[in-house]
Length: 238
Image 1 (tube, rainbow, N blue to C red):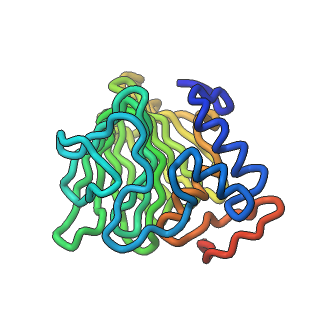
Image 2 (cartoon, rainbow, N blue to C red):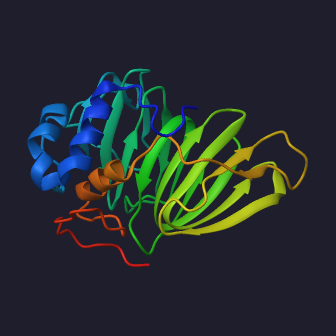
C-alpha cells in the first residue's frame, strides 16, 4: 500500500491540486477537463459521474448511462477508476477492484462487499450499513470511509462518523471508532493472535478533496471546514 501523498495517477494528482487550490467554484474547469463534467449533484436516474478505463457492471462494460443498483457487481481494470452513486451513497472505486452491492428491494444500500481493491465511500445518515472484506466486517452509520482490501489485511479509515470494526475470524479483535477527521485509521489482519488483529494504521491514499467531490454527487459536503471555504451545500452534523 502506498502512503498518503504517493499518488501514482497523474490525473488524480492534478485533480487534487486543483480542488485544494480553489475548491469547486474556482476549480470547476480543471475538474471538468479530468472528469468530463464539473462536480454537481447527479440528476435522478444517473449513477455514474465518471468512468475512466475499463469498468464493468455485472460483466458488461459501463458507460455514463449505465445504472448501478443493489445486487450489482462492479469491477475496474488496473488503470481504471469509477465515481458513482447508489441512492444516497457515493463511491470512488479505484483500479484493480471488485465490489458487490447488496441491497433490499427499496434500492437503498444495506451492505457491500469489497472483494479486493480500494474504495472511497460516503453514506447517507440514519441507515446502518455494513462493509465486508476478506478480513473484516464493519458496521457504519452516516459515515465517510476509505477501505483497501486484500486476502491478508484490510486498511480502513473512518474519515468522519462512527464505525464498528471487527476482524472476521477473531471476535476478540474489534473496535468502535468515532471520528471527526481521519482520527484513527486501522489495519484489520487475518493471521495474528486472538485479540491482536486490529491495529492502528497511518493515514494513506485518500484526500479531503476527494471526499468533498463524492459528497457533492449526492448534494452534501463533508462536516469539516476547508480553508477559504465558499462551498454552500448542506454540511453533515455529528
